[in-house]
Length: 414
Ligand SMILES: Cc1cc2nc3c(=O)[nH]c(=O)nc-3n(C[C@H](O)[C@H](O)[C@H](O)COP(=O)(O)OP(=O)(O)OC[C@H]3O[C@@H](n4cnc5c(N)ncnc54)[C@H](O)[C@@H]3O)c2cc1C
Image (cartoon, rainbow, N blue to C red; front, side, top):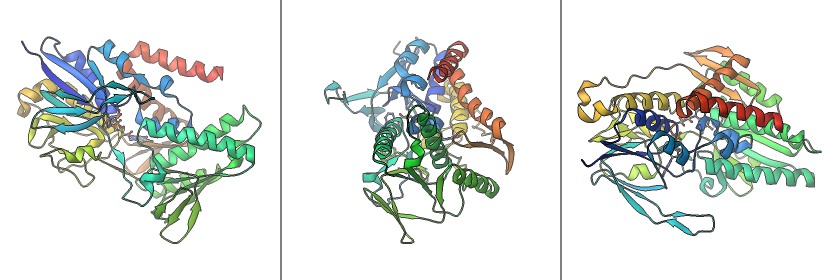
């Protein structure tokens, strides 16, 4: 019997949790499960700012896709998805090159019987002039590492030349706040091993168009976070909309000009441009793929989309790890029924367990409903728990404990 091929595009939070669970439920003589990702490592994206600040390393905190696929019994196919044809049931992967530009794999077409799209989102630059050319979007591992490599070089240069390195982070949502705090924390840590306090040579500004830090949280939290940010040396500029980014400045609509050697752009998300080119698909205002309440792409019952790249029809959900995790659980648990008899499956039902936010390692809040429910070390532990429980789901308990211990020993050995 010809095996049916299930192809999953994107091994982020949703895609990785989905393939890990589904591979344990599928009969391998009937189905072939294939995961495609452009990266070599799976990472927990809420940790992306720690890669950008240099406190996490992909070969230490990332999970290698090839190893993971071998262990769980699915196929990993590396490559950047460049075209999706739902009608012909075919996707195209770009040719793959090494660092010297030598071709490792040619452009490939891959056919599928069922497709799951979980390719995440991109930073929304709102077509602001100069962002594409001069700002770092912190939305994947490569961008985060590019930002860090430049930050490290510039800050060493600034310390030796006794100059200031000017960093501007545009957007004071969770990503901007967490990134700014982590940069200060990591530079303080690094300073313990050299003769400089690197933070003396950093001028870090977070710019926000609205009048509140963390605009999706209660004002009380935004104010408390602002106080902490200012206390640890981060400048905050509110009601300041960026008009243009150039090689060395950020221009605001109110006429102000801020020196900027490095700009990180973290203002909200939108669907990937590639996903907007799929013929026959309906899109949300944020350019995400619209799915029905069973996560099927409208008009294509054999195609599913979940996580940040999707939007449930008439019930748009926030782009968070919580939504991605719950959708992956729902889809993997019900997948075989959904491809045979969707009406027999209850629609996806999202449960909001609240949000957590941290300013680096300096301050954390947990919000449930509209109120601060936890703060301080309890919130920090809750934040860490989300990551560790994801690790346990992906690696299994024994390997996750080894990974956690390895993290602890690495810290002790520095
Ligand atoms: C810095 C930061 C901090 C965050 N903090 C929090 C938080 O504290 N709490 C919270 O709930 N959420 C947080 N989020 C949001 C959360 O990370 C996302 O909502 C979540 O990762 C979405 O999961 P996903 O599986 O849809 O996408 P992702 O986890 O982004 O995975 C997408 C995957 O698709 C792959 N991919 C993309 N394009 C292609 C392509 N063309 N070809 C092949 N592969 C491709 C990527 O390599 C990636 O592996 C944060 C996000 C960021 C950036």
